[in-house]
Image (cartoon, rainbow, N blue to C red; front, side, top):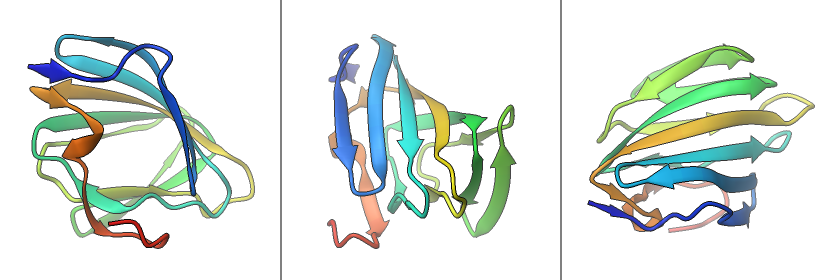
Length: 120
C-alpha cells in the first residue's frame, strides 16, 4: 500500500483547487473546488476507487459513457478502472469531498484520456 498524500497537501489546477483533509494507509480525503466552467480531464485510475459527495453547486459527472447531474447532498461512486470526469457548467463553484480508497493513492495513478487544458 502506498499513500503519498499528506494532510494539508494542496494544489491549483486550471479548473480549480484540491486540498487533502485527511489520509491513512488505504484512504485519502480531499476537498475539491471546480470553478465555473471548469472541467477536469476525462481520466481513470488503475489502483483506486473514488466516492464523490457534492457539497455545493451542480456538477455534471461523466461515468463510463453516461452523464449524470449531481447536486449538493448527492454522491456518485467511481470504481477503479472506470473512465470519469466532473465539470461545472454553472455560475458558482462546485465543491465536493472525494474519498479515495485503494492500494496506490498517488497523483501518478491518473491516466488522462482527454483534457481541454492540453495536459498529458
